[in-house]
Image (cartoon, rainbow, N blue to C red; front, side):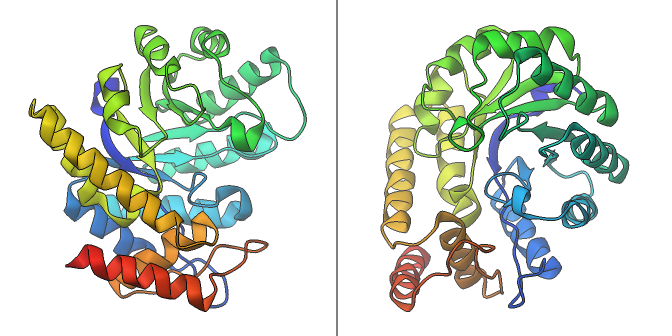
Length: 295
């Protein structure tokens, strides 16, 4: 598979849950279809937005099955397989490949501090298990591991499956460096898509894209068409949406799920415990936002 096939607007897919807190398969399919119909280019499945680390290995395997079945080759599913141990990450990578995802992504080993050599070996084992294009997931705010240009060069040299990364670190200027290294780099910041595209990013992976994919497709289409002023206006509209959603209060995962549930008329549940559900006041504020976007 050509690494140039991976680009564009790639929502970090939520994991809908029912009232009992279990995976809601029908709603997952509905969210998937809603975004495909909006024109997105792929999905970052069961990543940070998808609460992967809070899911069981069985739930993650079932999610891989569902998105592959629902997709039928239309877009690029990039399945997150990260886990605290190499053994678990390898098992999930192998399973995800067996059910038909197009690529995998993986956070570095977390909680215990690892050497660069241990991190590289982790990625080598995971990449070999899947035999698919591999994206490194740079999320230092959660993992406390920064994927620097120096570290990813070590991974790139040792793991031939490595084609790129999602860069969710603060220093977005590293995108330029990663691009010059021949890596497919997605920005993980939905409020910085347009600037990131101008310095070498191939697109964006982030959670708010789930909720209003049309806003980010407008940025992509305008930029791809050379209409920079239109792209700037679209980026401003997308930033405004994110700011207003976060201003409703509550946890980000709960906001994304409840907003999608309201917009599509489906059950998406709340964030998995220990995250708190939205309060009635927060839900009311979010409903006003969703209704205003629908007008």
